[in-house]
Length: 582
Ligand SMILES: Cc1cc2nc3c(=O)[nH]c(=O)nc-3n(C[C@H](O)[C@H](O)[C@H](O)COP(=O)(O)OP(=O)(O)OC[C@H]3O[C@@H](n4cnc5c(N)ncnc54)[C@H](O)[C@@H]3O)c2cc1C
Image (cartoon, rainbow, N blue to C red; front, side):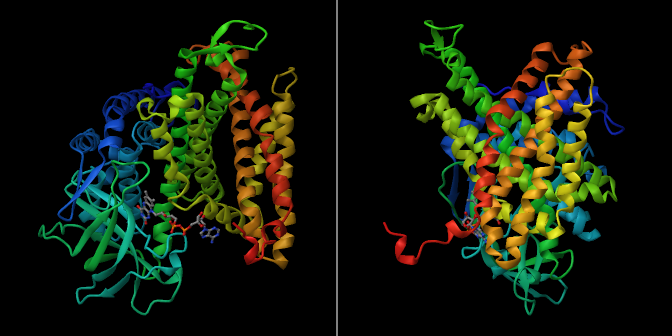
């Protein structure tokens, strides 16, 4: 089985020291996180997959090794890394903590979901909870003594939350009695923390129908003031494809006592705070999948000897798999998605930091635009990378022992939860682009234009001219694409649904092209200045070569998405019911 090694050098390539933390301290934290994730979480990843969780007498029991690995995480203080000091956190920038999250999800996606859900629940409480709720719950959640969940899904509704039936009735003491059954609740019950704090979407009696009538409630498993159990229970866990050591629970709330978070009927706004955090966290899962897949594939491709290369330099020689152009195509695809995705996530984390610092409307707008792209595109490409890992390993990739099939199985959920790729696509095209007349998109494409122009105006005959020319063209083409869809959508809203997926994938490839150009330009500048102390010459040259690969072999996929998008809705509406013949 291959060994994951946290890509610290590449992470450091993005980190910029600031007033909150200097480069040396940031580097130290990354080193410690790498050690923890590789040694503690990585070492139980396959064990957790094979041993799963157990449901016994109404309780969920984690495997003891998984439970201990989670406790080690809390005890080491990692949960509070980006939380405010007021609640016991370390208040470090998201730009740094997102790197730690990537390492954690790369070594153990199941365990990382415990922490991601808790951290997002804390952030929703910080933004929308009243003082009493914050004082009662946040310290223990930030320390990891208590974990959090997100309870949205019901058996009849997942994507369409407007159909939620769980109800809330006000009690005499202004708390609420919550009733209903939620399915697929990650970490809904387990024995790794002293308490579990559920954030539940439900409808107050008499509230409007649809999402506008939903409110958010904090519903503890155990009441902190008297240690009594609330009237809620886990009534079963799912058998599933991957993330076996993360319990997926059916939760029954039977007049469970809950407390309003935010305003009555303002639940979606508060829950979106949590979901957007989770969506960015899920995009890191995609990057983690690409990185693990790349590392495992590379190690195998170097070791495994098979066949003779057709390459000029190696012709006639027996070679490692890496001697075959087609295998290198797969490795470079994974590397391009991993490192390009990391740069993209880093930028989103910086936007989060700007937003947190306050009153940055531009950061909020950009984050709104980029979140669905990051979530959907980076998980789709993460899955492509994982599938390629199985391919690089050949038949051995299909065998459990090698470990790469687990990356694929665990990661397969990432394009489904936190809003499927289809739902992210509608959010992007319908709400974030057409809904604001393309303003946020223009803000971002301006950055593409500025970067490409700055490279093009350099006197030196830089290798990057051609790449910059392409980005400059795309900065104009991308917003133009929506004009056509927008016009058609005025006649038929179905045009938006038909165009959304291709628009999202197009947007993802163009966004990654921008980040690859930026990284290549930075690498080239360092090479020209002979600045190779922190980042070696090979690392910098590798960056430029991967950028060229991306532009030559991956970016052309946009043409297919563009053609599909422009073909309109007609080809998707041709079949009469009987014509779906099988
Ligand atoms: C392992 C696991 C963990 C989970 N964890 C949680 C959790 O912690 N908390 C929680 O609340 N939920 C959780 N979920 C639920 C998850 O978020 C939902 O499964 C997901 O949102 C999709 O909903 P659905 O399964 O009902 O699919 P559906 O909504 O039925 O969608 C099925 C398909 O139809 C498409 N589709 C649906 N509506 C539209 C539309 N309007 N336009 C275009 N396409 C559409 C979707 O894209 C998808 O491809 C989890 C699920 C799993 C499997």
